[in-house]
Amino acid sequence: MTTTSSQAAAAPPGTGSAIRHFLAVAGPGLVVMLADTEVGSVVTAAQSGVQWGYRLLGLQLVLIPILYVVQELTVRLGVFTGRGHGELIRDTFGRAWAWVSVAGLAVAVLGALVTEFSGVAAVGELFGIARPVSLALSVVALLAVVLTGSYRRVERVAIILGLFELAFFFVAWAAHPDPAAMLRESVSIPYANRDYLYLVAANIGAVIMPWMIFYQQSAIADKRLRAEHFVAARVDTALGSVLTQLIMAAILVAAAATIGRAAPQASLATVGDISTALTPFLGATMARVVFGLGVLGAGMVAAVVVSLALAWGIGEVTGFRHSLEQHPSRAPWFYTAYAGCAAAGAVLVLVVPDLVALNIAVEAMNALLLPIVLGFLIALAMRALPPQRRLRGPYLWLVVAISALTSVLGVFGAVAGMGVF
Image (cartoon, rainbow, N blue to C red):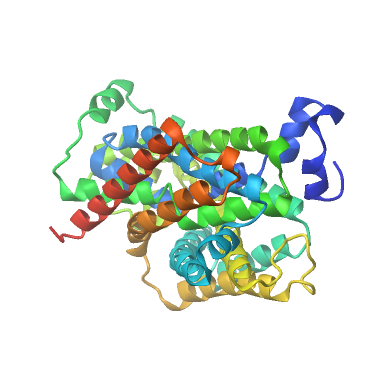
C-alpha cells in the first residue's frame, strides 16, 4: 500500500489481484454504513422490538435495497464528477441552493451528535466513568483521529471503531429468539396504528440520513476514486448496506426476544435503560460489556462521520480547502469546523441533562428531510453526471419511484406519529 489513499486507489487493477484492488478502493461505503447504525438507530431498533416484537423486522430487510440505491447515486456522483455533494449542488444549482442543503445537513448533524455523545456518555456511566470525563475523552479521541493529514488513516480507525458493532450479533444470538414467532409477526403489520407508523418513519430516517450522502460522496472525492474504481466502490456500498441493516435487525431481535416478550411497555429511551432491561435475560456481561462495546463503536464512528460530513459540506459550499490529505495548517477552516462539531455535541450533552426524547425524534426528523435530500440527489444524477452515466430509462423511473415512496412513507409516518392527523 502506498503512502496516500489517493495513490493506493489510483493503482490499476492489473498491478495486483482483484482482492487487493477492492481493498484499496473499499472504505467509504463500509464506513458510512457502519456509522448509519449510530446510537439513535440502536435506540430506535430496540424500541421497535420492545413495542412491536418482530413486526418491524421485515422493514429492516426491505430497506437494504433502498439504502443501496440511494448511496449508489453518491458513489456515481463522486466517482464521475470528482466533487463532493455540496460543491456539486453549488456548481449545478447555485450557491443559495447549496446553502439550503448544508442547512438541512447542519440540523441533522447536530441531532446526530447529541445522540452519539449521549450514547457514549451512557456507556461510560455503565462502567462508573463520570459524564464530563467520558465526553472529554471522546472529543480528544475524535480530534486525534483526523489530525493525521491522511484520509486512509481516518478510514482505518473508523472501520476499527465500527466493527465493535458486530457485538450486537452476539447479543441477538444470546437472546434465543423464536424463529416461528419471527416469521409470524413479520407479516402481521398494524398499518393503521399511529405509534407503529411513527416508528416506521423513525426506522426509515435511521437508514437514510443527509450526512451519509455528504460524507460518502466527499470521501470518494477525497480518496480520488475514478471510473476504474466504480465497480469496486459499488460492491463496497452493497456490502455495507447489507451489514448495517443486519445489525439493525439483530438489535431489534434481541430486544423483541427479551424485553418485548416480558415487558412490552418498557421505555428504552437511553442506552442505560436498554442495558438494564437486558440484564435479567442475558446476564450482566452480555448486557453491559458486549452491548456497551457495540454502542461505543456505533457512537464513535458516527461522530467521526457526521462531523466530517458537515466540515466537508461547509468547505465545499464556501470554497475553503476541505481535504483530509491537507495538513491542518493548510486547511484551518476545515479542521476548525470538524473540531467545532465535536465540541458542540459534547457540550450540549453535558449541559442539558435530559436529551432522551431526541433519540427517536431525530430519526423521525431525518425522515421529514428525505424529500429535500433525495430530490437534490436525483436532480444531480440527471444533470451533473456525464451524459453516458446519467440516470435514464427504466432505472431512472425505478430510482424515482423508490425515492418517492420512501419519502412519502417517512413523512406520513412522522406526521401521523406527531398526531397532526
